[in-house]
Length: 259
Figure 1: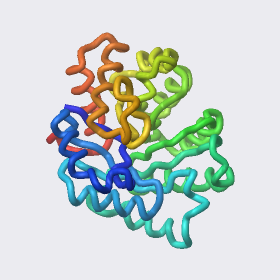
Figure 2: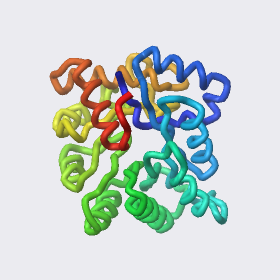
Figure 3: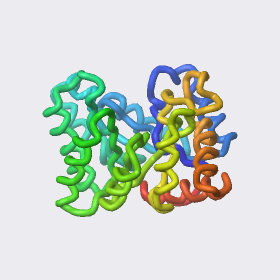
């Protein structure tokens, strides 16, 4: 059984095929997944998906690239959504210097808000990072001064020293389809170093389909098996061992009972 720890099943790409996608995931052994919000409205949809589908759980947040579009009152909406049944994490949050959609000071403010909300509610937080490794680490170090962190570096693309420091601060490391790309040799070497108890897998669907289904759109949760296969090879273990390890880690991290 597999646990896809990061999906965007709320997005419009899935509107006409969502039930079939969830069914295909189950057939592929993906028994649980997280639907992750990027805006207040998207987060509301994720909460609804957690109510509609067994095995789907929700994360609520405002992703850094969408902060500038947030309406007055959206943060208050998010604080209320975070207390809804089925919500198991805060995010996605984080920082992004690749796109110039939100002023960076505002990104930093919202990243801190998300981490403090997660701390207040006793929930983990989900970190988006793109072209801003140093900035992310500075923000995490500042948060670490308040206590051990309970978060996940989603779709991790950093190096082994960065991953090691994240783990030391309490973070989990999650790998998506990029792990399977031919050019990702350094990322695979990094994946081999992550302690067993801190390892997670994801698709980030509808984005980042892994090899050998890289040309298929949209990416969907059933494809997480390919990332798991790559991770098993990198770490010199069986697919069954990686499936069990990452599923157990996800259930513990998100506070879920075995199903």
